[in-house]
Length: 96
Image 1 (cartoon, rainbow, N blue to C red):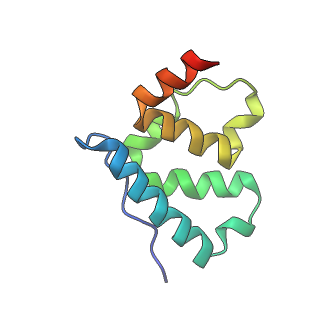
Image 2 (tube, one colour; image 1 turned 120 degrees about the horizontal axis):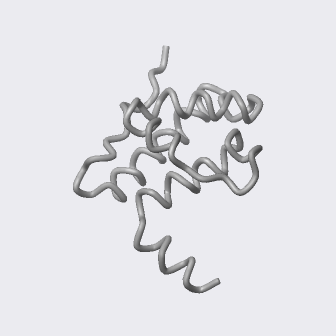
């Protein structure tokens, strides 16, 4: 049985780099275990389980434009990336 990546350390000094590495490990895990073939609700559930308790708490603080986005894998990943890269998020918001 293939194990998911270890929980993401959201308190790491290099949280953006840790997210990039964790996300790559997640994509490999999802591909090998066919998580990508599951419904989005199940993909998000597996993602949240793999992220670990600290990152799940962060996920629970996100504000969603559309209530359905809470269970869309791309929106979840985007919000997690924004958390890991707050300075890029700020600059991107300033452009639009």
